[in-house]
Length: 320
Ligand SMILES: C[S@@+](CC[C@H](N)C(=O)[O-])C[C@H]1O[C@@H](n2cnc3c(N)ncnc32)[C@H](O)[C@@H]1O
Picture 1: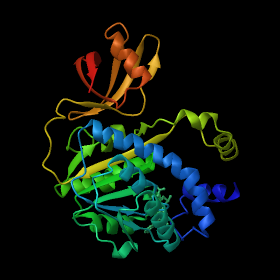
Picture 2: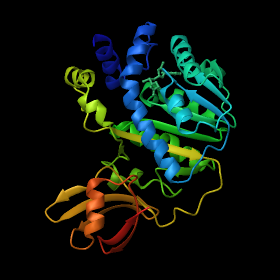
Picture 3: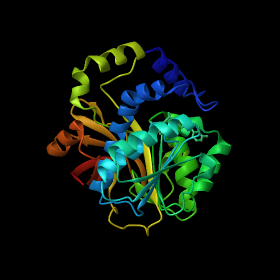
Picture 4: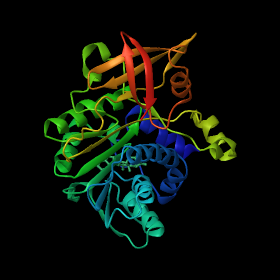
């Protein structure tokens, strides 16, 4: 538990980026059984959403940048078993690269898997995965990542849902890449400027909630981790961005994406949602649309809706 506590402190206080913190293989093993599993559940949510939105990888070459134990690549290969011919695992830590390589080769013996140091990894025409690495990158390093991925076919970037991470993902990744002609695939429903960056929306951040498998709640190991490290197992918030270089799709016109979770009041919900016209804090009265009310309160598969509004009220709507 001490190792996990040390790692977690570094992740939370922003010092993890300073040095290679993987001291031995056992630490990667431990991380892979714990924190990486939670990250994997977030990846499952993101990949599930991409499939529901009919998106599939635009290249057969996969890169996991800052791979750690390679959980992102493994989840992606499980989700799209026939989509890729080759994978490059890249991390500043040679120990992490070797560990991830072993894990992926074990699960996917047919896959052509290479490792590469971060400055040597070729991202052109690849689907590039980045996961829980943003807070370890300073501004210059992030710029260098953007430079590396500029000729990629797509990026799927998943992060923890802190206010800072989420907003940096928008301001320093989404906006510059869209300005360079990329297309926003998810969670966005449009390719316009992100309304979260306008001044009245400074307190908000784009985040979502993944499902924690029910087994985790019954498992004594997870319970101990939750109690000793103060990890809340009931909620699993995440932020993410998926961008590609395909022509902009028109199918999402009119779609709204709920940000965070609706807040419940007596007889109504307040629903913060983003669409092509901006970010709006809608009111949904139970009596206006009881089914939609129930659905939003419960949390749909993906919080994407098409609705009819009157003034500040949602009066009708369906899940996409
Ligand atoms: C918190 S871990 C996340 C690992 C994995 N992507 C995941 O989601 O579980 C961050 C990883 O990024 C790597 N990393 C940090 N800074 C890096 C840099 N400048 N270049 C490449 N890798 C870096 C670390 O070595 C570590 O393995």
